[in-house]
Length: 266
Image (cartoon, rainbow, N blue to C red; front, side, top):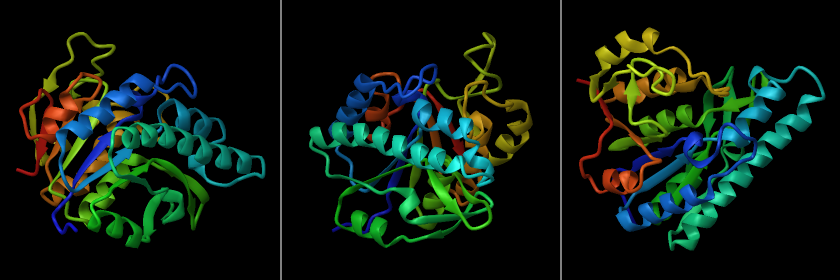
């Protein structure tokens, strides 16, 4: 049984789904990532994944992140949560078929938010899973909210919250670009990637980052970075890498040098 500090691996929804479609899973990428995680053979890992074309279109259609306002939203809340369990199931299939002892933990079953921010987290299951050397897998989810009735909990808020509560040794963010840029590299040819940033430099850049144009009810890249600030302030390093490139996740898990953006407190 383990008592070591875990590492968090966050896989963005844009990596494991096609955000231009709806309910469009990238099964080959999911299986490749599972193989890379298996081959890295590291202990004390927490995996969190995003929703991509499963969770975000439905959440936006039913305005789930704005809270409960009318009865018609209830089916939307239920459907949003359900399709996230479907995507999670596809990821779990790949992990388990590759021989990894992965255990899914639904955030909606153990987390409550208040005006969109986590206020209650029943940690016993997660602690037990880690202690017994299983790999917990969580995800962005539709959750109940004490003020709003319900809302969307982003995988990025979940990453930061767990990182600070469990004193993790590092966070790896796998996205579909090479790192953090001063503009959207998908639309701006002259976008500059930052290889290394301090917390102070990151805060200075926040307004310049803007918001992603992709459908993302949790804030695009700007929202993702904002959510990570509490973890970085606690001294937890964050590495942003391109998880669509073969063996990048394997290499970063093994501690090998990979192109990307490293963000540290100092």
